[in-house]
Amino acid sequence: MKFTLLALSLMLTIAAQGQMLNDSPFDSNVLHPKFAKGKGPTILFDKGHHNFIVEMGLAKPLMDVAAADGYQVKVDSMKFTKAYLAPYKMLVIFPAMPFKFGSKAQVTDEITFTSDELTALHDWVSQGGSLLMFNEHAPIDKSVTPLFNKFGIQLSIGIVSDSINYETTYPISNKESLLKFTRSNGLLNTDHPITQGEKKGEEITNIMSYSGGGLTGAGYTNIFKLSPSATIKKHNGSAPSGTANSQALAGKFGKGKVVALGDCNGFTAMYMMNNSTKISAGMQVAGYDWKQFAINTLHWLSN
Image 1 (tube, helix red, strand yellow):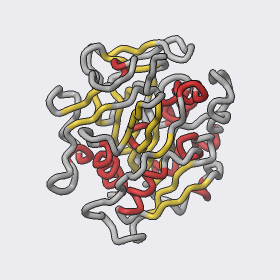
Image 2 (cartoon, one colour; image 1 turned 90 degrees about the vertical axis):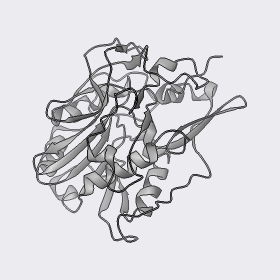
Image 3 (cartoon, one colour; image 1 turned 120 degrees about the vertical axis):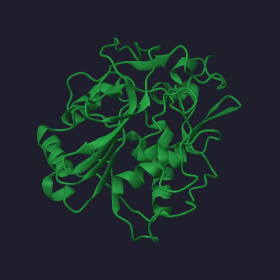
Image 4 (cartoon, helix red, strand yellow; image 1 turned 120 degrees about the horizontal axis):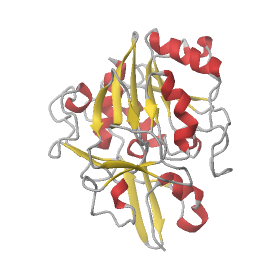
């Protein structure tokens, strides 16, 4: 049986492939916290739109890192309104769906966010809020397209693959979907505060995405650049469509800020068992800078 680390595919075949779990122990310590404990801004994690990463507890490692960095963490499941969002300065939206993940194979014409919610969110960011949001490969990309479009970001449909810039060492079948963004291959933008860090030792050097979707956003800084050899392929029954040049964008939006990623797995610290083989993904994986990248992202959004 071939094994892939495509998180959403694995969830759709969870009985056959195993279960995603938080890796333990995971070191959530932050060497130089940005804020005194509990004195930083409150980060709201959305749980009101079938955000399965939050529902399954897989967002806990990121929450623990944020708390160790001094942020206050809150999880809530309310619909987005002006009054609901007003007390917060930062919001995290992990991949959202219009129905419980795994209950249907495809997204058709269901609505994940109402037009009123998207307007409230748009206005909140425009007036100074900071938003971190995640896309994923099909079928999630269809679920979040209206959300990303509201902020001027277009999504490809399918899964991003690269026949040249991919990780070769992982024991999985779809290696070409493990995209590498490094200083050496030139696909990691090293001229942005998120990749530079605020202090010595916080620089980002090596990132690998665990599959995902593609992004394009005029006016945003392209942090994870897709190479000319990157393509959009069919996945989970969705015909590929659209083009993309990025898997991570960051930029100002009105008075606020937006960071958008095509893959959410780097902001987790999970593992899966395939027979007796443990496959890890996220902030705890040695050799990649996802934990520092997550910290730097929160810092940039909260500055």
